[in-house]
Amino acid sequence: MVTQLPDKDPADGTTVKEEAYSKGRNGSEVVLYAVEGGGHAWQGGPQYLPASIIGQTSRDFSASEVIWQFFKDHPMK
Image (cartoon, rainbow, N blue to C red; front, side):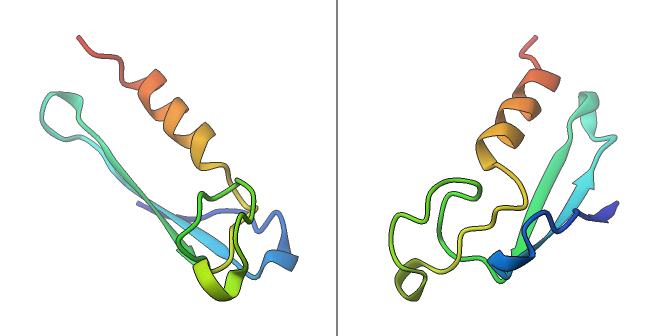
């Protein structure tokens, strides 16, 4: 299932699509976040180098929060 995330910060020049693939073996799931217009930066983090060097950092979601939520939702058994 592909979902376009809300453009929380139109000024950052990025948009984000979430692609979720669930119902895998033993309840496994894969989620991909495609940052259109983004660069090689930690999304939701600081723009630690100029966009001309690493690309734009998206402010539409926090990679840290998404990763934490994923592992919270999928505890090891």
